Image 1 (cartoon, one colour):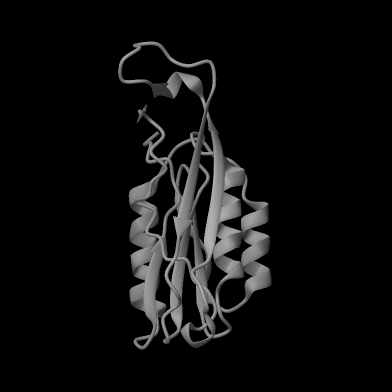
Image 2 (cartoon, helix red, strand yellow; image 1 turned 90 degrees about the horizontal axis):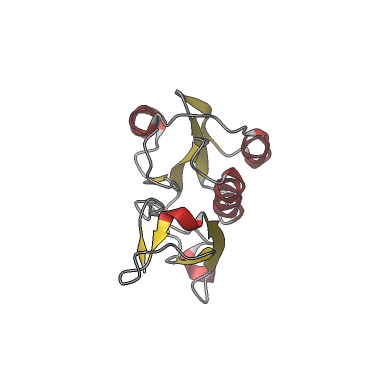
Length: 172
């Protein structure tokens, strides 16, 4: 089966963070189930769209590095994404950060903005993710530029730096 529009951007710069490596016994998993509009799925041989389609994505992470992590989560609020799925991914990443790790949130739709600079304040990060409202367009380039700038400006030299981008890859 070929996924036409909905390529769940495993351009999702994925790093599933867990407890410090010394205490990690196994790799954790993040499971996401996404129902897709049948119009966007085509089978190779039939030429017709199925009546319904579902895609299951399993993301496996590596144990967390021994050094702290500075992570920028890009919160895609564009009309083409399922915002509840994006929120779920963001909360999963928050849940797996250690005490020494910091997170920043860059929210984007028509425009992009840093909603939270690199911080250890998990409560504020959860609030920002929960409060996200859907937008219309996709300012992905602007969001990536802000994320890189946040890491270069406020990232710690000793920290592992990462950008997480769960997105459908569509440009509106």
